[in-house]
Image (cartoon, rainbow, N blue to C red):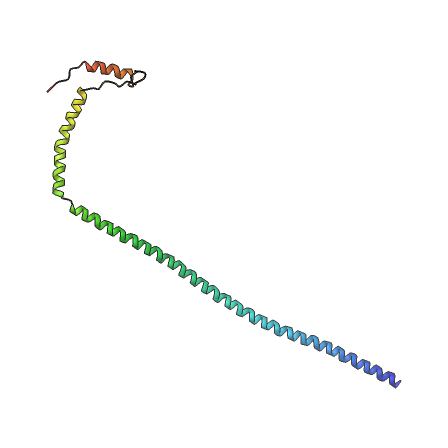
Length: 162
C-alpha cells in the first residue's frame, strides 16, 4: 500500500498545486487587468485633455475668422466712404464754379418774362380753338359730338386782331 498511498499523496499534491496555480493565475490576471484599466484611465484623461486643447484652438481660429470678416467689411466700408468723399469734393468744386450772380440774374429774368408770356398764351388759347380732327377712312370725328358742337358755336366768335 505504500505505493498506493504514495501515489495518492503525489496526486493530492499535484491537485493542490494545480488549484493553487489556478488561483494564483486568476489573481495575476486580475492584477494585469487592473493595471491595464489604470493605464486606460490615464490614457483616457490624456485624450480628454487633448480634445479640450483642440476645442480651444478651434474656437480661437473661429474668432480670428470672424474678426477677419469684420475687418474686410470695415475696409470695404472705408473704400466706399473714400469714393463718396471724392465725389462730394468734385460736386462741391462744380457748385463753386457756378456763377451765382448770373444764375440769380437769369432767375429774375425768367420770373419777369414767364408770367406775362403765360397770361398772353392763356388769353390766346381762350380765343383760338382748333377744329376737331377726323379719322382718314371713316371721315368721322375723333372728338365726341358735344365738343364738335361747342367748337362750331365758338368758331363763330370773331378773333381780335392786333
